[in-house]
Length: 247
Ligand SMILES: [Zn+2]
Image (cartoon, rainbow, N blue to C red; front, top):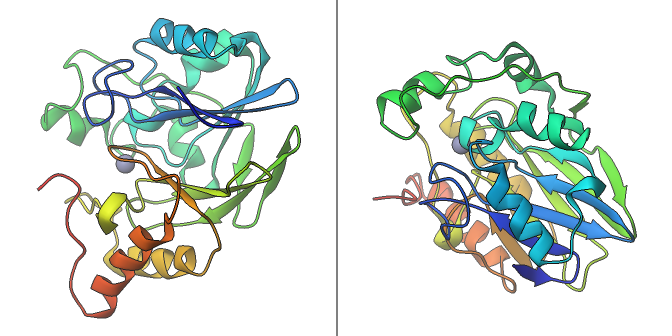
C-alpha cells in the first residue's frame, strides 16, 4: 500500500491491517531512485505475503539493500535473519540492542515473555542475525533522494530508535513502539522498560518538525502527526502515564 511517494506499508498483522503474519508489526518500505529499504521486518514468518505486497506496489524485493529495525522485539526484528538471507540487505539496529539480535537472545529481545503472553507461535525460535550497522543517535542515511535520520528513543525497550524521513512529499516520523496514534504508549512489565527514558524520548520527538506519524502498530497519520507525540508528552509532564495502546 503506497502511503506517500516513497513510502509503502508492506506488512503488519493483528495489531495492524492484516497484511502478513498475525504477529508482525507494521513493515514499511522506503523507496527512491531504485533503492529500497525495509523499515521493521516483522517476524519473518510470512515473507511471501510481504514480497507480494512489494511486487503489487512495483517494488522489486531484489532491490532491498537495507534492513532497518526500530528495536529488537520479535514482532519488529525477529525476521532479520530470514530477510537478510532473502535479500542480502545489510542489517541496521540500535547499538544498545545489537548484541541481543546477533545472539538470538530470546530472553532479552522479549520473545520468552511474548510467547508466555501468547503473542507468538509457541514453537517459534529466534534466529541469530549479525548486525552490520549499529545505530547511534544522529546517524544518517540517503535512500535515493530521501534522507533518514536516527533518533535514539529508549524507554519502550533498550536500544529503541525512531527515524525521521525527509525529502518525501511530507516529512515522516517512524516511531516504532515509542509512541502511537492518540499519544498511546506501550510500557510493559519487562526488565528493560523505563518510564523516565520514555518521557525523555518523547520530549526529543516533540522537538522535531514532521507531518506524518508512522508507528509500529495500528492507526497511522499522514498529516498533523506531531499532535500524537504532543499528547503523550502532555501526559508525562502532568505526571500521568499516557494511555496504553491496547487498553
Ligand atoms: Zn516493541
